Length: 245
Image 1 (cartoon, one colour):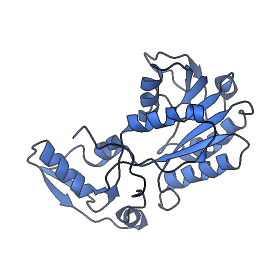
Image 2 (cartoon, helix red, strand yellow):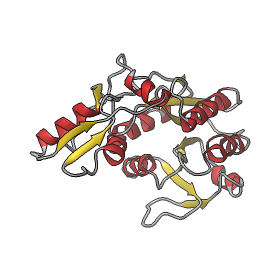
Image 3 (cartoon, helix red, strand yellow):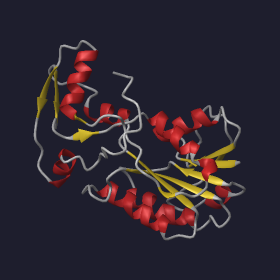
Image 4 (spheres, one colour):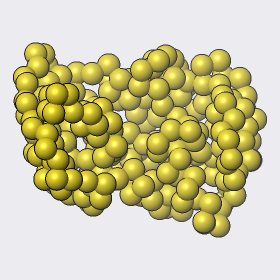
């Protein structure tokens, strides 16, 4: 089986490659910049311009599309870039698209683009599997719980997360390779739904920190949707807890 991984320099891409190198697949990777020290053949391609995409997808059976851009050129990468890529895929057996739980209900531009990309894939002729996950442990930690200020975690403490380990989700995606197109799968979520305040308090307890927690409310529909847990799914608790605490 010949697999192409896009977005190999991101957290998910790196987790995929770490596990794929121990498996019996022919793997190549594609990106605009060549990663350092990778064990797989690399092919240049650019989702913005479409340059190199035809060469990147040549002679592959399955694509795991881990390339994403939540901050810069999001629409050009998530939607227009995906459309360019799909136009080159008349020959592949399976296109695996990692996505995010709750994107149709959360008023955040990046999530709306991910949902638009899902619809684009569904309406294409490419055989696909859409695999949604909740946020990674590292996302919550890096964005919200990495650095206390004045001995306090100052956070929107009421927002909810159901975070998972990126390596578990990578394993889930790899397990889909030989199953053929599945359409949109059930969500892949962490084992616990916790408020950010609960996460911070658990981190303080486990690490014997002297920090405190200051919870602050935020305005807007995005904040309210996260309080309501639109980014979680209590019926799909599949992953393990955060081992890094």
